[in-house]
Image 1 (cartoon, rainbow, N blue to C red):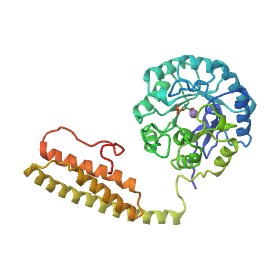
Image 2: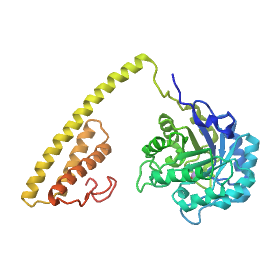
Image 3: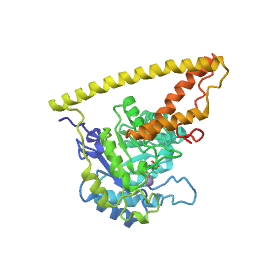
Image 4: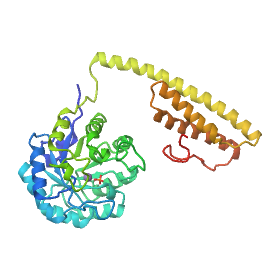
Length: 384
Ligand code: PEP
Ligand code: MN
């Protein structure tokens, strides 16, 4: 059985204490609130040796004014004290050059750039400039909207000033309406980042994806199954009383319980019977996919015939009642077969966009681009 080698194992800061197979685990409170809160949380989460680094927010980027914005510089000594007592490296979020200077002077071991900072190249460059000539590991959270370029750009800005140990944190993406998570995981974004930069370790922040304690185990397991290299999970000695992100922080025993139940699955299969069974099933999938593409091709031919009829008779491309009927009917059909209705609903938005594009090109014969009706989440053409 072959397990993926954890890239953090070779990072100097962990001096071989990061796991060789299995996830790096960073934990600690969303915010450092008091010396007692931070030290007691860290004591409890480090007792079972499942945590490899300590996090705590000192300066908190809050969406609305009048929220708790962190203790600021006075809390830095609590964090370094927590590091000394636990023997674990510490990390905090920096959003400008002053944060960098104060965190490094206090002896914080690693830094991360938050999602609201990664979106702004000026801020990232300011941080990078402050780090010139400094040997400190830096983690870059994904920007709040799913733009891979900004995420890569922040990593590159750090590399250009000489930061050697850079990692990415996948914390999910803002979504206007997302259920049940606080942030849309969009797992494909970390897969894309890995494809672009296979050399950069990626960890997952299931706390900010989930927004709720109850989902953290599931999101963490998915992250491991997608071969991410670690987890940053918020924990608090008394989450109900937390000054920020109260609903998503875990009690130390809950953290330990989740960490002990995570399964690290193998990257490659070497067992002959398993390989054969998978090959057989994948052969069937290949045949079904071939049929699926053929069916889409047949549908396209009919879409073109309909387009001709509409053009000859001056009929508009879109009839809403027909579109709503298709959506409702196909979704119900899917659900009757035990297929997720939302999935089929989204699939039909895509199929319908394709049909409209074809007919639009037949009508206007110009490159006007698509009159695509918007995101499947969009409100204007939701199922009635
Ligand atoms: C945090 O980690 O507490 C935080 C503010 O995260 P993000 O930048 O992902 O919102
Ligand atoms: Mn938080």
